[in-house]
Image 1: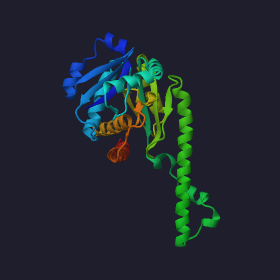
Image 2: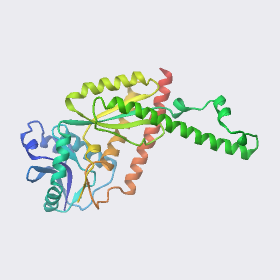
Image 3: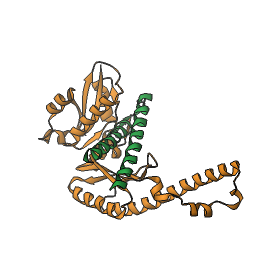
Image 4: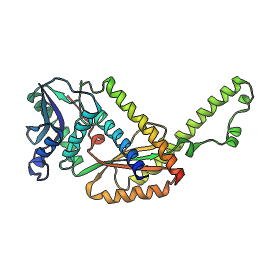
Length: 246
Length: 63
């Protein structure tokens, strides 16, 4: 027997909430949710017979859907997948030991949503080196037709291309940073997962400022027509609730 | 065209979900969070994202 923890929330927020329907979530996911409380904090959990958690895409998506459903109605700290403990006492222990940090984080996240903005582009579109530029960039010492020289030129150009790409990313990020800070200061620039992503940022914004965000993204798209700008969200605040608990 | 866009967005959203659920949020210290299977899952997501970006670029040219 083990307990899966999905999220931490404030008890009063949970009790006063009229729209959160645990029964609907339970019947949708086939998982029976319940709560374990300590003072003003509550952990939203489910119980299972086995002592480990299955790692497959379907179960991860079900887990995320449960958290998403709860986050639509409550301010929560979402737990990372595989948050498994052995007993109710362990849950209470986690709530007790991390009481201050959980309360502080919930306060910071109250009534806010997380969004993600990505600038997508073909790397070649923005920083491709033309043949003319290539001739100018290659140092004389590397020029030549032998196979070793061609190898070195290719290596050198690859390095140059990466350098240009990084520089372009940095410059664009600086520009975006000053713009995005007009609507929120809670912004995290993430290291892009692939070269096809120029900018990858997550931000936290008050729910009522959603229209400002949409306008902001629309303006960005006009300023950067060479990129596809993707806005996703609202997300549970995963990126702004990165707390390590004991 | 609408269907293509829907598929692309769906793929990217799945990547986003996996990235968040498996690597972000409150984490219990000492917990074994990522197994080899998880890494494969994320890696698969990245490849999906890469291909969707290429598709997007092609669509952009068509427009």
